[in-house]
Length: 392
Image (cartoon, rainbow, N blue to C red):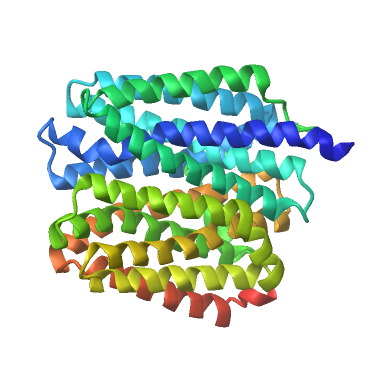
């Protein structure tokens, strides 16, 4: 009976993330081209992309604490309403200043969606079911990225600003669906709200790194850094070194999305049952690093696609497994913990795009991929040998 009550909750939370990411996926491939209309330089475009992650980094723990105090449903609803309005502002922006304002607002409200959704899943699943729930959540996210970029590309033929208006409408429709159909998952709400402790959560993050789950947070940052480095560097490499069109690169990313959805919805549970969650994380990051390392050696588009698939296999094994481990081993509220988890992920998204673009232009097309791969391998050795990852 308990199991039957959980299914509707998870269905609507997966739907929420899917629709949310469709809206986001429609926008992110167009961002550099849209910013260029305002004469933005490459550095400015990088800062515009990173401003989103900076806002996420600061606010993710706050949203997590708010959800522990007031419930998951109202926070998710507020986030979707804010996203809808910020996408609308982005489409209406007539200067770089308003682009930055809208982008920061997008990051601020999107900071609530994933950590609170992860806390929601943790609320309604047992520890044994957790990896499957986190995998399905990751699959919903990946499925959103399958459809989002393609839809955005088609809509941009009408005008570059049109996809932003559609993304706004999608977020607002999702807001109403959450308001009317998503049940609350939190049975026992926190009696206090320590907002002050959440802002600029560097101290809490530092304590988390020194704690029992420090290895998980280090690897979360590394995964996010490598992934976002790849998202910036692969389009540059494909267009400049292989002459691939923007449309083809979009199709390659959609292929990654299909594979990620398959991995996280169907295969991740079987993989973790076979290897165990700790070994799955190490194996996933190793495969991801190998794919990154091989990208500069792609001489034709087909090889680039194969290496991107390799990266996706590793990435899809890593994130949901790390999220499951963190949610199982935390001794604090799920909202607080998943907020910290999201902060480390956002921190990787701050440095990944900036460093990826800078390395590509300053040291050659191979440097972002080689350096990211080497960082992963060195960190894995550190975490396994010194931090005792398998003893956690």
